[in-house]
Length: 154
Image 1 (cartoon, one colour):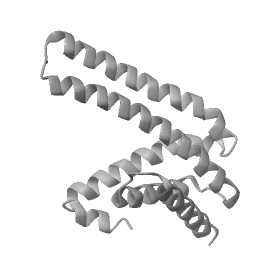
Image 2 (cartoon, helix red, strand yellow):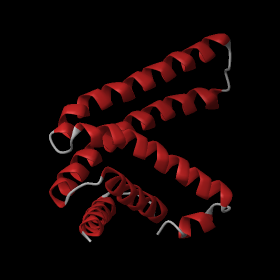
Image 3 (cartoon, one colour):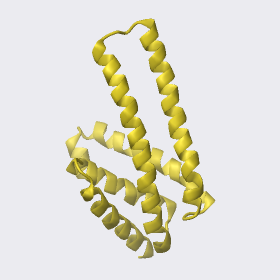
Image 4 (tube, helix red, strand yellow):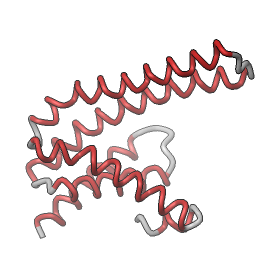
């Protein structure tokens, strides 16, 4: 019962937070809510941990999302130009490494903030839970023909 309460509170907290963001599509909201419920369950968060964790995790996700967006915009601009010469390919490789380094820097930045809210084991399990959720999501999208898989994630 306690775990259900934690998952439910986290779900409500994120649904409200996600709805406040501009331009988010309803499908993304459902996926994000399902992701937070999945992570909350996998980390076995207590009710005292759930709200502070979701706040820190939201900031963390926002920084990663912004980094990914800027990388993607630059890559798409290069791709639209249609110039796939050696210099462009080399620049893409360098930019990709910079992106990966940026993600690593963000993870390092948030490590101590997470450890103020959750324990080391939970932090270790966080990245695994993120990977598991992504894998599960891809399987459902591929295995269920896209839309059908998303209905079951509600």
